[in-house]
Length: 215
Ligand SMILES: [Fe+2]
Ligand SMILES: [Fe+2]
Image (cartoon, rainbow, N blue to C red; front, top):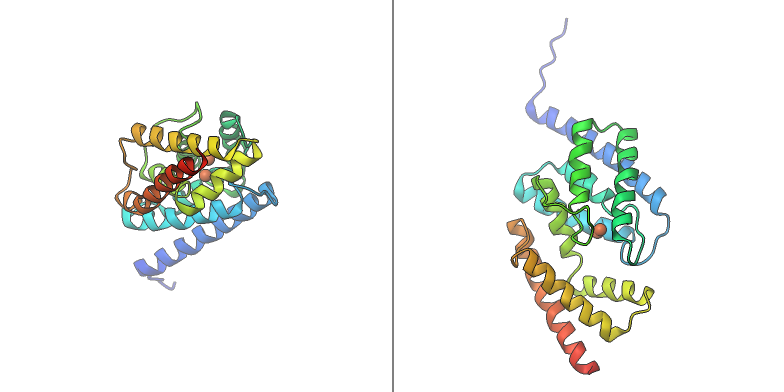
């Protein structure tokens, strides 16, 4: 009998390979589901949030495979407009189906679904994120909603709802302020807080200037 001795790094590399393969499958499923969706929640939103989230996951030593799965599924179903509850509800149902199909175990599925449920402040399904992975999804998603990218995404969404530029700017400013108040001016992670600062300042300044010019 040949004794195979595996170093810790060999096992870690295999685990990493397994996780990458699983999440590649997940990405394919997401692409299939969202098709050529345009607007604020297109594929590039998922990919940007993934990039930010994985950076934060690294600094928080969080489970990257769980973070990535949460991010890839978090806006799976979108009803642009008023129906945030329906979007989250349907996303959870679809996400559960996909995760089970791909082979995530029941504990992982629950953790991922809990994270998705807690990412949106505007849904009645929102609850305080409990795991570090859920906090990372929340932070990364909020970072993509401010700065130049966040502003562009916001006005795109408001345009689809037939809302004027001025009104859209006012609503955006109020939304940021409400969110800041709710979160006590802070995201959950240290890196998240550092990453959002500049973009947040940009957004508030831009919106105030815009409202002034339109008044
Ligand atoms: Fe969302
Ligand atoms: Fe999102």
